Length: 214
Image (cartoon, rainbow, N blue to C red; front, side, top):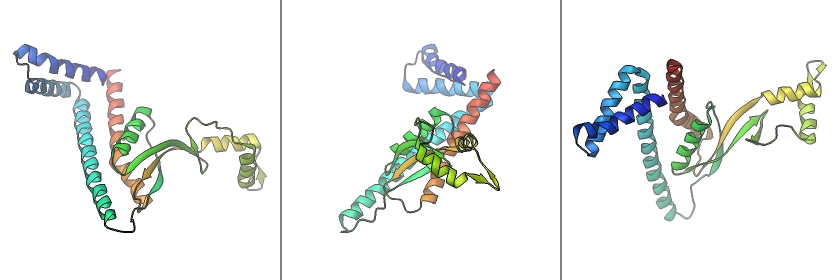
């Protein structure tokens, strides 16, 4: 993936030199020529570039749409004695595992007016723990967990086995603050469908291109 992108950018820079035309249009034409050539060499590169461009365009559209909606809410609130805003925090479970992709997702959410990425954590057996905190439960939590999961059927569960079971039940979640939260389930589904799913598709294309180059 990186090799194809470098070649594409190199062609974009060389095109104005070869044509003695040092303009932005020549630079763009060189990039498009390089893009077409690289897409013939590796079809997934063209698909990746197209999807990445569409995702960037959608993010800009979402930012503009959120700006207009938030401005309308602020104006409406200025003429009303009572505010209709319902702020809240939603835990969005993530299928993304790459740290760079998670950073992109958190940044996009923060750039969209009305939403803010607060923290990244792990949902461990129903309790949220910030990423990086020690995994060992406290004595109080141990006692509570033993009460809850101390037996399986008629057989008691030993403490090491219980800790192993708890440690395996992890799910990465992103905490998002929303200035006007009407339906947490709908908001969570929108984040995953509109932002996370395209990033997953882009990551899959990158892995396929890297595997083809190996």
